[in-house]
Image: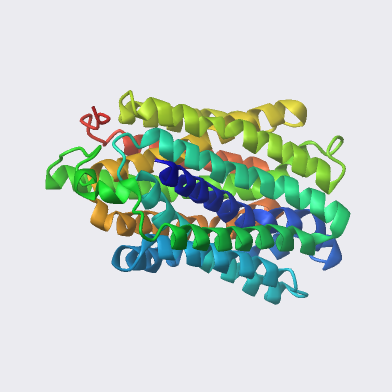
Amino acid sequence: MARDRVHFAFLNLGHFFDHLLLLVFATVAALTLTREWGMTYAELIPYATPALIAFGLCALPAGWLADRWSREGMMLVFFLGMGASACATSFASTPIEIAMGLFAIGVFGAIYHPVGLALVIQGRERTGMPLAVNGVFGNLGVACAALFSGLLVDHSGWQAAFIWPGVATFIIGIGYAGFLYRGSNQPLSQEADAVKEKQAGQVNVDSAVFKRILAVVFFSTALGGLIFQSTTFALPKVIDEVLADIAVSASAVGWYAFVVFAAASVGQLIVGFLVDRWSLKWVFLAVAAFQVLFFWVMIGLSGLLALSVAVAFMLVVFGQIPINDVLIGRVTRSEWRSRVFATRYLITFSVSATAVPMIAWIHAGWGFDLLFALLAVVAAMIFFAVVLLPRALAPAA
């Protein structure tokens, strides 16, 4: 149905700008504000911590409101609030002011994952590829945060890196409002199939197995969030250091980071295809094992070899993202799925909020090699947790 495809496009754009706006500061702080405000990288980046905490904590009320009020209405709040907050952040003149702006971005950005992902899989039997495609847009948002920010910083100043994506998000929100208004009498086909959807793609498990699956999901998603936030936030600075002789400007760093993130986004498509057709448990184990390998290999590397390994570890970091979402979709009912997604992202982003102060502390004392060693250990913990998943998690017929 055409209306469903248009709605899916809005949801994908939402995921793109959700990740882009949250990571603008990572590039701006690493490449510009440290010089303009006379602060070190380790001193400045902790001001992003309140935003990341809000990104996690506000997911739960967002999911509750979506289930009790309207998922589409919450998505409209997301677009308009996120866009306005980004524009407001561009007027910051002190670290405290920019922290306040980032906090607002985090509050509105928290809406997307519990609400948008529930809408993505609503009414679908096979959820791996829709989540993977949607995830690619999120990954491209991560990639374009570094690229667009670097280009805008070099040509228009760091404020433009917040203003232009913020304006674009707000305009998309206005378009989404028109889409909802014009289609108010035309329900989405997913909504029309709500009764059927309650069973679509689900795996019937008993209470004990259900609790074990959720425990593995919440544990692996917490550690996976730490890995995701650490790698996506630190990568521009990592590239700035390992390619110091090549990446000599903000634009150059942005381009290299874009290449890494864009190439790695294919990981979600690969994993989405596999989990719809193969054992989810074995796919998950392979992804975790490759994370351990690539993080360990990254230690001590520099130059183009380091860039190649960065693509490899980001490929499996991004590849893990749809797995937990597919798991939740298979074992939860539609009417309370947003709340389960909200709990998953509350845990994910609350834990991942510790990544920024952790990066600052590790980088100031030991550099990024210790960070990659720590991430290898964290990935190994995920691997051993996934071993506990039951085998009976076959995709929908």
